Length: 118
Image (cartoon, rainbow, N blue to C red):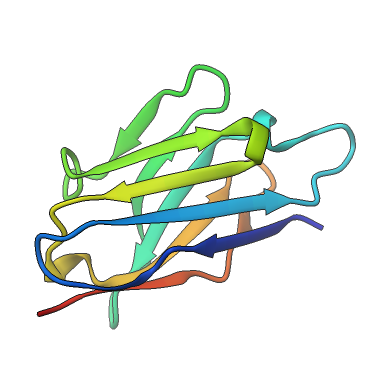
């Protein structure tokens, strides 16, 4: 069973930065973290979960939601089985629970809360 654990959330003032981390483990059948594309999603109170960013496994191609483009950066360290989300120039609209997603196995983490408020 794949385990996905996010960390790094917290309370930050508008204009501030946070870096989220996500460690995935428990891969089987010869597959490892490096075989899978990874994504971040978020869900704000009263709203549906939405795509934030993704990164492919081999060529490290990235894709971003328009709302975060130019402010967020996704990256990964395959040796550490970790994907990161660097979030800069945060606004209150970025307040949400952020989830890490392993594509392929369709495995979700439990989420980490990000609150942007003065």
